[in-house]
Each structure stands twice: as C-alpha cells, then as structure tokens.
Image 1: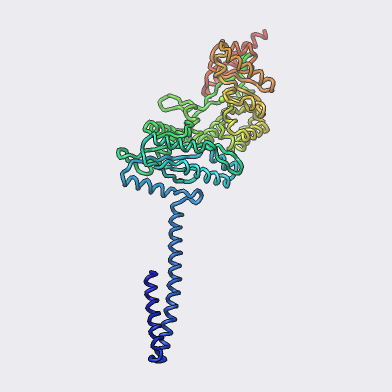
Image 2 (image 1 turned 90 degrees about the vertical axis):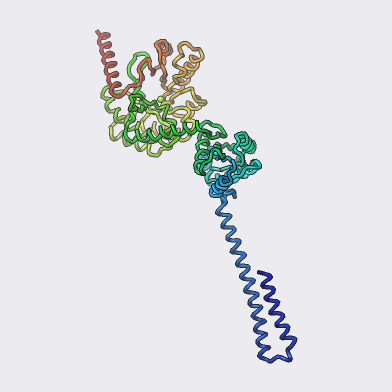
Length: 501
Ligand SMILES: [Mg+2]
C-alpha cells in the first residue's frame, strides 16, 4: 500500500517538475492545470495517510475484540470458550490429553466475609500462582467463578499427580491479600482423553466435575475419574431424585424414640427421627440420605417437613401426655434459613402449642461450622420459649467452648460413650466428666445409646437424669408411640395406686 502511494506521488511530482522545467513553453492554462494536479496529489496523499491510520486502528480494535473474546478480563487467562476450542483441537489431532478441573475451597465464604473486590484479588493472585506452577505441557484456563482448567498434553496419572504436586507446593506458602495471609486450598478432578477412550467435550468436563466433587467430599486435593466413581455418583444421583420425589409425594415419615427419667422411668419426651419407607417394606435410615440432602440444598425442605409434621403430631401426643417434650434435630443449613423463625411462630400460633414442649437438637459439629449464626439462632429460639440441646456431645472438638459460649440448656451425651460405659473405664471417665461439667453449667443431661440393663443401672447409680436407647424403647411410628405411652402410663398409674394402698 505504502509503495503504491509512493509511486503515485512520485508520478505527480515528476509531472509537476516536467511542467516547471518547461514553464516558458506551456500556456497559462496548462500551468494552472499542473498546479491543480499537484495540489490534488497532496490532497490524495493526506487522505491516503488518514485512511491508513483508520485501517490500522480498526485492525487493532478487531484484534483487541478477539483477545477479549478469548480471555478472562480478571485474570487475563484464556477463557472457557478457548478451553473448549483447545480440547476440540486436540481431539481432531487425535492426541491423548487430560483435563484437570480445579475448584477453590471455601471461596464463597471468603467472598461473603471479605467482599467481592477481595475475592477478585484472590482469584488474580491464585491465577498467577497457578501459572507459575504449570508444567511444560500444561495450559491454564479460567472457566468462570473460582473454577480453573488445566489441559495437559499427557494422559498419564503420574503426570497429573506431578502437576498437582507442583500446584500444592506453589500454594503452600499461602496467598497474601491486603496484609492478610490466606491458606488457600482447592479440590481438583481429572479426566483423561485417549484414542481408546474418546469422549465429547462436555462428557470430559462432566467427568472432571464428578471427580472434583469426589475430591471435595473426601477432602483430597485431586481425584482422577474412574468408572467406579461414576457408578457411585449415578447411584447417589438416583437416590437424590428418589428422595425429591418421596418428599414431594409426602412419602417420608417420622418415628419417635422415647426419652425417660432414669430414676422413675417416667416419660420425659420423644425425639422425632426421619424415616424413608420403601415400596419393598424396607426403610432407609437418615444417615443414608441426610448428608446427601445437605450437599444438594434439600435439607431445608426436609427440616420444613419434619417441623410441620412434629407440630401436627404434637397436638395428638400432648393429649396422651400433657408435659411431653418433643426433640427436633436441626441441620447447619437451617441456621441460615430466614423463614425458620417465622415458620415456627406461625406453627405455634396455628396449633396453639406452648413452645416449652419443643426442644431443638443441634450437633456440635454443625454448631462449630457456623458459630455466630448458631448463636443468633439459639438466642432467638430461647427468646421464643423453645429449648436447645447439644446432640452427640463429646464427639466434636469443641465441647467445652460450646458449653461456655452458647446459651444451651441440655446436652445429649453421645451413644458411642454411653453404650459401653458400664464396663469401659475410659467411657466412664468421659460420661462422668460430661455430667459434672453439664451440672456445673446448669444444663440437663440425656444419655443416648442405652442398650443394656447394666448400662441403665450404671447411669441410674450415677444420677444421670434422662436416658434414651434401645434398652428403653426403639423409635416408633406415631401410633405405636401413642400405644407405648398409654401402656407405660397405665402401668405407672397402677403402680402408684398400689403404692398408695
Ligand atoms: Mg438427635
């Protein structure tokens, strides 16, 4: 282009020079014409220069637009689309490769606590650390949020572990943001593409995702996808789908396990326990589906079902035993449920129930996950007239601080310490110390997991006020529980009458 313009201008200048050299022999009109042509040449030159600059600018803009479309603006890494393209390119070339999906742990909590601006700085710092940790045949992409992908031009497990070790050692020193030292951990999942195992982009990414979730749940830094993992995930997915359906159809049910006074054998209360009856007559116990529900944001619906059903059943139960207390288990996710308190207020009003009949059980581990939220929930529940009990007491790492920090009124000593406490000195030490502590702090005590008469006798001698377990009664359906309470009350009544004679 420039050469063409130069030739063009040279032509004009030569013509003007020719005219100038023959100035005497040409007419005034010819002189005027040559001047116009010369000025015209300057005009064309200026226009051409301007056009060239505009073209260059347009070219720059187009290049920038292409770069922006392929890169993440925050970390300047190549983005999701480039990652997909890169996978497709490798598939076309039929070369083996692997994909590692890296997801930051607790990023949401950091974002919530410190703000999005801080979260962005963390992502930039993390991206830089990851860049520095890349092995020669690895490429890094940002998928969005706190998810990154590393594509490795190898499909060998050892190489994947080497890449993971490089990442771990780069992050070992932590990340400093705004004078704050952060311990950054991640969960990663890897999936392999080989000529024998040709997968589509989305299947490959889905498998990396499955492996990443498995890493997150098993608290490993990386898991490589395999079929066994897939089957586990499929089974879990099926269970989750069935659970949602069962919940929607009202197929879940509540059982009630009695809690009695150790000395008198009088009924003190019942603990509501969730059960999932199956078409074949078997029953799925909550330990098989509560964690799953927690992981998939279904726990709020489950808790809502339990709370609603307990209030309905409580009206019937109180007719049999007017001073009964019903225990309801709450999950950590219930702490953040805004509607919980208003739902409870509405239920108290609808069923005209005194809140003193309801005790909420929170496990140590759930309380410790969200101490401040737990404290605020516990305080509100107590203000409303409910009681709060700490479940599985002794199994967490912070039993003492919970007793010190939170306004709880009861502890339930975990069955794992209680069931053999009559013969194990170590269990006795834990049970007796827990009771001593609870008494000093004005908390009442329930010993769970009482499974033998010897254990019952031991707890009775120890002065443990309340007991619960198979030795007293297994969990019962509502109608069975009513029968059990009626027969127990009848026997108690008859014995009192006999004593009175
Ligand atoms: Mg419980």
